[in-house]
Amino acid sequence: MIDVIIIGAGASGLVTAIVAARRGKKVLVLEKNNKVGKKLLATGNGKCNITNQKPYLNRFYSQNSSFIEQSLDTYNYQTIKQFFKSIGLELIEAKEGKVFPMSLQASSVVELLLCECEQLGIKILCDKEVKTILKQNNGYEVKHNSGKVTASKLVIATGHLSAPQLGGVDDGLNFAKRLGHTFIKPFPSLVQLTSSHKESYLKQMAGVKVEGRVIIETQKGIIEKQGDVLFTNYGISGLAILDISRFVMEELLQKKSIMLIIDLIPKMSHGQLLALMKKSLVKKSSKPLKVWMQGFINKKLIRPILEPLKLQNETVGSITSNIKELEKIVDGIKAFKFTVNGSKGYKGAEVATGGINTKEINPKTMESKLHKGVYFTGEVLDVDGDRGGFNLHFAWVCGLRAGESI
Ligand SMILES: Cc1cc2nc3c(=O)[nH]c(=O)nc-3n(C[C@H](O)[C@H](O)[C@H](O)COP(=O)(O)OP(=O)(O)OC[C@H]3O[C@@H](n4cnc5c(N)ncnc54)[C@H](O)[C@@H]3O)c2cc1C
Image (tube, rainbow, N blue to C red; front, side, top):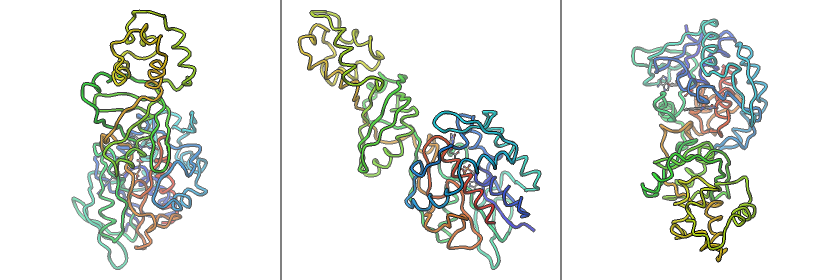
């Protein structure tokens, strides 16, 4: 006799299974993929940024912020660290509060979770895609592609639409809808952005990577992110872009396009750069501006800076007599304008925003307020986080809370 059926052998499902089994429950996990933790294996570029030392509330997003506050509450970095220690996985701390497995391998996270499941007698069946959930008198009947099972408790740990190539689907939302839950419409986040600029303009810059600062003006105020910015033939990518993508995508729900302002040399102030460039000007020099600028910035970015200023064919000599032109060039570098109009979609996204309305979920237990015995964990809920270990942090917290409650 099974006590708990868990749908989804991903991050939150596996932790729920372990915690519930440690408390004596008989657990069955159904996974539609041919192996366990496929998405988990891809996290942190295969290193798994497993959590963050500073899981502050402002690193998470939901329509219902009190849910985040109450669910994270006392479940902090130490709680997660202790759990992983209990399965034999040591963690190491890196910059920006990021935390990784000591092995720096996502595969060790999956293998140690799996080994713990085996030792606790948890049954995990792969290639079992759950199709329907039916409420019965004293539990739930779950139909999958090759049979059906029943249990008094059910955990929906099915993740969300991000990375469909790794199994990302919205099955969990569909199950929830049929159970009467409402949900917040999702969009891809932590994702590369596409641009409406001319193909030739994009081709010109493709492959250039700078350590930049990206700024956007949103209805909620100015948002700024610093880090790698990579120009590509479809638009723009890099860590700073992934970080700002959530805010861009939110704006794009109402606008066709949004302008990114990119500081291509954030290490210098406008004044410092102006002074440096001014010093290297030589009166009456016939040196082409586009060659002179290579002393300061990647060659491929020069045409997109000079062309809008109509300076592409000018010489250094011509701007020494008109310092206003030099100021415009510095503006072009410190506030480079790049229009974006969409994203690479769920396929490129690390996370999907939105999900099951958390007003319908108990934040301390992850149990549905509409159906006793049904639990929702992880990305399927309307909670998403910044890059840096916050999404997995939330998945682990859900798993611990649901497992303890079950
Ligand atoms: C490329 C990439 C890198 C990432 N890197 C990081 C990182 O370094 N740090 C971080 O914090 N976050 C990272 N994330 C996000 C993180 O992986 C997710 O937030 C997290 O895995 C969500 O956990 P979950 O338990 O909700 O869902 P998942 O881990 O996605 O697990 C859900 C499981 O349910 C299964 N399933 C779905 N529907 C059914 C069904 N009908 N029947 C049976 N099984 C089903 C799926 O196949 C899947 O195995 C990354 C995401 C991606 C895509």
